[in-house]
Image (cartoon, rainbow, N blue to C red; front, side, top):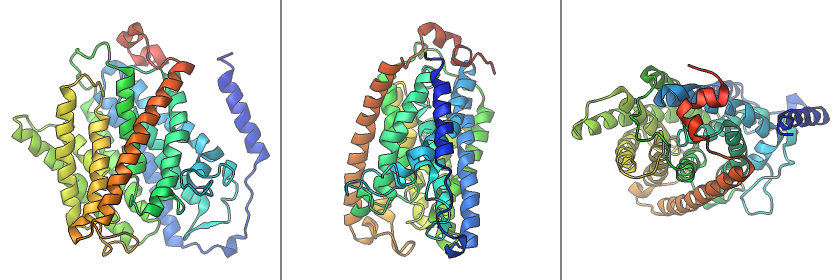
Length: 433
């Protein structure tokens, strides 16, 4: 029966595609599209998609050689599975008409099977383009989690978990944060490109996963990265793609996009250098891996702030995030928590630092739709971000624990001890590097 389930799912997808062809609902001439904005978001959408293969290389280079393919595939498969979910009802849950006025979830029928997305504007771009741009954020978020349970999760169970995660964790957070009727949006929380929705949710889910799946059987074995060159390549692809992630979130070819691009560049640069300097102060040699991790932490931290802060403030964001995440990595290494690739210290902590510092450094001089932060004499935004941080942390952590338990009941999450020793490349995919 289990062998026929995947085939049955594909049949259902085909039937839905035939039943809902997604025809145009308005004359194209009636849409106020800006060609420059459309062109930039088309490019940004492609840039953000590139981040997921970049993450595959970044994570794949860090694990042991016998788990490289499995780890990379866990990122790559999200581009397939999450896309299908997003097209059917995921986009509707995140950006559809608000259900019940609570600002928590969208109506799954609003854009079901991409209905009502052709010939309809979202600002100065088509709704279908906005949907595809946001899809890439949804794709990379569960992929970020994989570093926490690398080298010990069953692939089939992983597919179940990320399906549940997108529907129950990601979509409500996206709706609450970015939809005009969303709870956090109306509260006044600022998240320019996903510090809350993407990185905090992935970070807390990663911590929950590491705790639930417990330590690897071989965790005492020296963990030597399989390919440091993969890590460097992955970092380069992530940094390049992140310009679409952050600057694209301006949803237009304008000065705000240019500012977000600048703050993204400087925060990442500052974090990369700060990570290396901090390691030197601790008596360690400067390393390629450290520089790469630092750069990614800077990118994570500036994500919620990119379109609300000045370039000079982004330097501070990068430096603070690098030091905070580095200290968390040191602390985590002294505990029994086996977060394989330190996803929580880097993405979870980096996202929280970025969210809080947005409340400190945001200014309307950069973005009139934003607010004044703590450094400009206003405490309201910072307090709102503190409240949102607590709510999101509790929801993402305990929600993920529940989803892990549900997944485990449906299909065991852990590979067997023998499969772990053999390596997931062989035991899960019958392939070798």
